[in-house]
Length: 332
Image 1 (tube, one colour):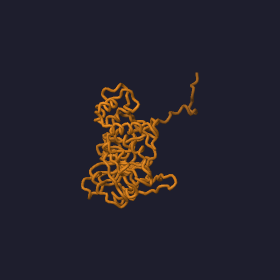
Image 2: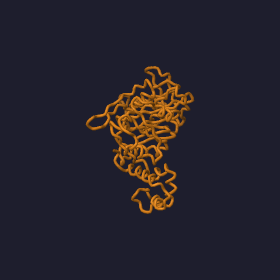
Image 3: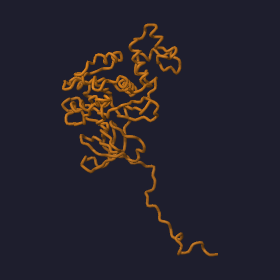
Image 4: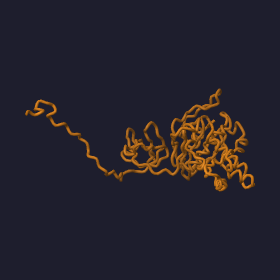
């Protein structure tokens, strides 16, 4: 019987072996990695602040699909000199202390993380040009409470309109506030930001970038204008940018300027998590039926029982329920 192949057949020859390294369960220790903080993310490229210098980096493959966002505390290997045309790798991401997130719409299951590890959410709203949008402010406050962040309401353009009416809406919530005017003193704003990591959030045209440029000279964030017909601002910032506060402030701290938003979905927020941000009201809901959302139309809600007995502040309950309704309503 003749052999199936002879020396003239290509199957006769041994196939070339793959020249790859054998698999191993051992993982690198990254003993030479240095600590840094991600200050902005742009199309997959990460700018990381390492020992006061800015380093360009990419996410290492072992991180898989784990996202890296502005504010993340990371460990970096490779060329961390910060020189032009150098590139490092982010190999580890520390556990996040807080996560500010939103969804595109209320029925969108996909969460979008805006920034990590911030302590304070500064909701920036103009008193005029463009007109304030309380429902968007409400939604931002809900996101802050859900993330465990302290909220601060910053009202700009007080030279164009009085803040009294808008402030009366939020007084019962106990939200701290500051008011600014064009060219006015920013001392109170600085006092609220010093020593903390704060995120500035608001819709386009309210003056976030103007505020950042005044607080951190030399930043040169692009300033937008408001459309006279629609009353809406044009997006100028395209990505979140984290900036260290000036050394002369003395207490350190960071601010994050975010792109202007026009919607703020809250599909990720559960009613039971929101009530947890109001300890005085939460204790009144202990006898609520299972599944109670504590809304105004809920039967036998403990909040209504407390109101009838004079044990709850009506303005406080109304404000909470407004935030609860904002979670399910339109962003505008």
